[in-house]
Image (spheres, rainbow over the protein chains, first blue to last red):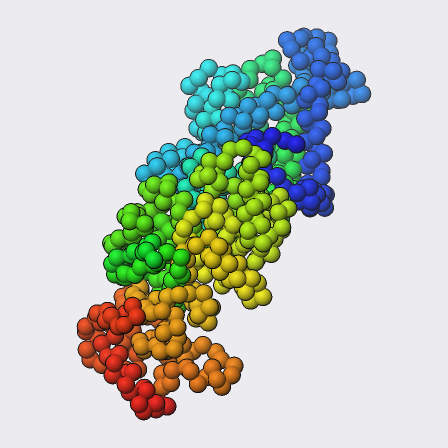
Length: 296
Length: 332
């Protein structure tokens, strides 16, 4: 038995097996959701196992073999080779690691504080606390996301850590906004009133009464956001503000290869398709999770 | 018997986009320990607002609520914990007053944690089990979720939660109106049994007059935020004095001739409750009162105390009573 007061336990609720079974049934009844899950699974597994499964591990780093440069796709090099003669298939698979690392780091930093801020704002509706938090998020949301990340990343020196920092800084308001609107919908429910009348503390009301009721929308957004964070990260890298060569980051690879278009198309098209593949997978998965969770 | 709760000139005005809503205006009453007071009225009469102020959902605009000699005219988070422990509340609809994401055990254990200082897990489960037994629910319900229960069972869980802190006063805000008729009786008998066993005081809010007759010791009838008549239940039904009371009692559907006979005659329900944003001047009931005169439109009636702790707020109640009992005309 799981520890009774564990935080995850509280948030997800000790729901019946039957509810999970019903959600899973709903999820798998949509073939697109299953396709999304399949794509995400391949991405995650190949990212984790990348060092062991890529055919040319040396291609990942600063490696040059000009005799092999610009080889078109073949059995030996499924995605061809780039201007330095590196295997693009190996680099693309390895690139999944950076994409997932970026999304994981950004979202794991952003989700919890963003959600808590939103819950506080929603709980203290019509007070100065709400005004302060929500106007601050408005300021961040008022600037187009890519422009804000560009501004931050260009002030700092261009590398992977700073682009993560830039995306983190512009991403939390979305969770604050979502948690705020979900909390506002829940906070006037009689069960919250009942807890207040009993004399429960703020911590209990936010985490035991409200949080379990807004978790499904937050979880759905997290899955959908993985794709978007990767896309923004790739855009920053493409503009030269993210990971720097020779790092096999997908956005960086697209930018490098773009110089040789249209004749040598494979250094650009394959990493770009990999980006599309990841984002498509997470979006389909996110849609499926949303549908499955909204059934109860 | 001592007075456990006293309400003095209680007033609640809400600001809204169309003006100030006079939800409750200057009402006073008191309850003795172990008794039930019924607040009756149409929707919009302010009966729920009164209950919510006593429970502490929002503070009164003016006036005082004295509970056990302590002034509690503030909202719940400003009240001392000892007061919150002593006042329980049961909401109208148990499908929204129980958190859908918590088990019955979680729901009932909250007041135990806050007020009874139970931290031991085994002791907590034992107490929750006892509480469920007290409201005649099987103890294995504690591992279920509200959605697994029927409406009546949910309401019993809400009652068990209200009992958990061992309160003396429980506010019952239309506890049966969201339920099927078939389970209403069970809720009411359970409530009455608990009252007898634990000496509870109830504030029973309802629009159902026949239900009121079975549960309340004293009835206060509310109209547009004001109390217009207050009497012991028996007097209230057998000899209503205020024209509004007569109107309500005469609108109870009856089955037998016997029941029909004891209904007040010569008064029919007409019109609907006016807006509380701009309540009528003078007696607020004059727009619907068949006996209204010029005086009613300008002067607010003062409460007149009659024997037996009865209070009626009407300028002409003696005349109306005389008229109705001597002539007993079909219509006036």
